[in-house]
Length: 245
Image (cartoon, rainbow, N blue to C red; front, side, top):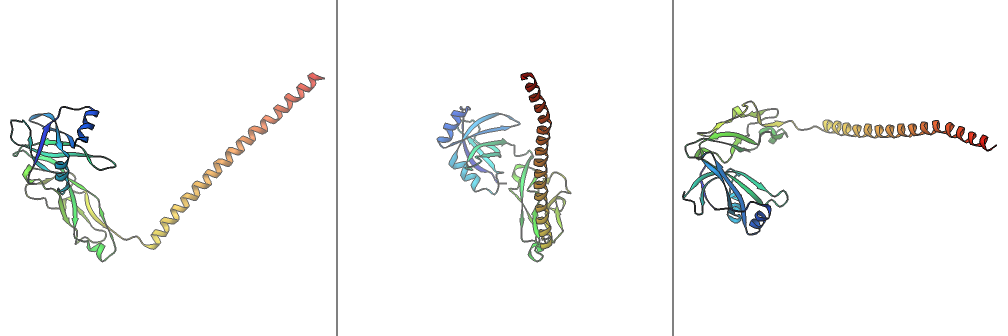
């Protein structure tokens, strides 16, 4: 992975009000941490970090970080995590992980399919993307931005497992090698679709009958309660009449 330049500035504000003002002024709060240095609060240019993320294949970006007034001219770091606003999508916060050129790092790399599976093209099947990220370990310079997998030969009922994917040079895949990454499922027939619709309708009817039954039982219980209460009320009324006489 080729590193790209990124400028940063030391950040003094940490409270919510200060951070909000920071964002209003076109800056994004960030923090850098690593094994060989204490965590440091930073702020980034919103325009610069937006452009960097927008032009990257994934949010795994290797940067040559230049922090203002820092005695170190450049600091090699990985964009570890980017927090976005849930509705607007704008960047709220960035985590940077300082790394060394000669030390391996472990990250999650997105995996994407290439080509059209034969089971989809000729058999009408559906390509199922099961594993979206692969955990890898490598030197920073060898880290891939994403893993591309050719699914052209994938037939209906067949799968591609992690063990069947060739890792790029200098990269090691971590995790269960038997896990399925891509597969092609058979198309749903009209009979299967009708059966699924029927089953869903049947479930709805059962629930409605259950609700009606529960309502009926509740009404019966109330009726029984009233029936039991009636003789008692009548007896009480008779006693009052006797006293009056």
